[in-house]
Image (cartoon, rainbow, N blue to C red; front, top):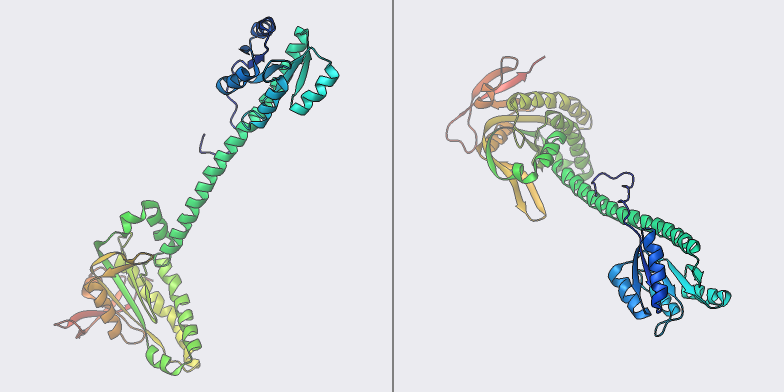
Length: 383
């Protein structure tokens, strides 16, 4: 079946109808078989009820012409067995009898017969009844074929729905730490290929609120949660617009990196533009919170370097994260930045063109570094 779900496909070309002729009198069998064969039907013959049931299973006829009076199993008995078998329950059965037609008709209906012929056989009547019942069977077969096709479509559709649900769930999980375009690219490329541990040159941005610890010591928990919600709601769209990757949140802090898992040619310019937009977006929030008595400002650090990246964790709980000195350097620069400042390391500075305004600062004595670290203050970006 085609994968495309649409109108029912046409039925295959019909083979000659197969008619099972059952009679214990050889002359009657030969007469019926000759008449049917002359009209293009395939005649299958049986001389008893027992033989008829065996031929039913082996030959799968399209219609049965069944004599009523036979030794052993009568035509009524055979008809009842045909109706009792789900595989032949709808098979057309014509009872052929020389007995009183009115009495035999009642018994035949009770046994499950579809039609009746009286002996001696009238050729035109025989062929008319066979054609009529074969038309009915053809319609039943078509309904059954389409029902089977529909079941196949339903199975295909169910599999597609399950696949789509799994894809949506995967995409929703990825969007927890990737922008929508990056998450879509990961799903398209195959999760394993992009999320396996690897090393790459990335630009890391670390942001953190100055004064947050003092704020949490004096504020009610509900106030803290409300401020964090506003903070993340303001910063999140800027991260998404820049297509940055957020591996996890640390309360009032956030790590964002660029150039992974999807490589971009302008990782540091993106990081710088985002950092400037964050400071601009943070100003009205800071003013709003200041009116409530909360002195909160934003510090940002930017560093470029190689990191090991990939999905780390345990079954049922994984985070996509970056590990390496560049992450620590971004965090140290962020911690050193005053409220409203953006500090940039030397490698990130080298990746920014003249459209960005930067001033050098005195080399910084950062925790974990033996020597002072050169740094620059990012003041403005492209107009």
